Image (cartoon, rainbow, N blue to C red; front, top):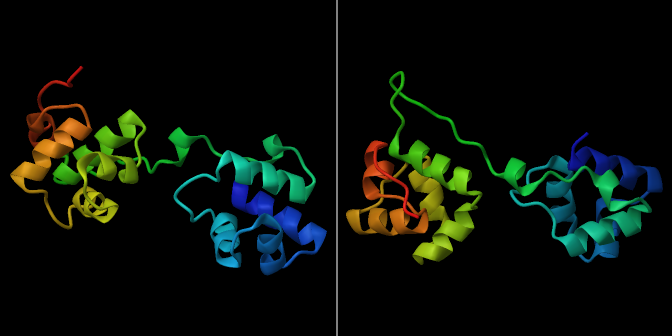
Length: 153
């Protein structure tokens, strides 16, 4: 059972609408909907986890909250047989380090949408941005660009 299905089942058992439930938690009904559909990219904060459990009258452990590592989208796209795209290498390196797109973007001083576009190969970073990415991901430019090279320590 996922967090979303668990929340929805408990909320409905108690007879709360999304709006009522959100009001009790101090969040919007839209956010409740995202949580119930498991479509929010981040797990709830520890404070919200405790409030959820309190309002639902259950233990936090019963919420089935995924660990951070499982919640990051696991990359794995390959094209042309065994060739990884630049975006796939970026996503894999970020995933291996356990970083979100937001964290990498903050380290670089760019918007998280840029990281998303690069990982999806919609656009490509400039040489300057690729160097910043390599620093943010503690690896060489060659490793990101070509899939070869060493990690920085």
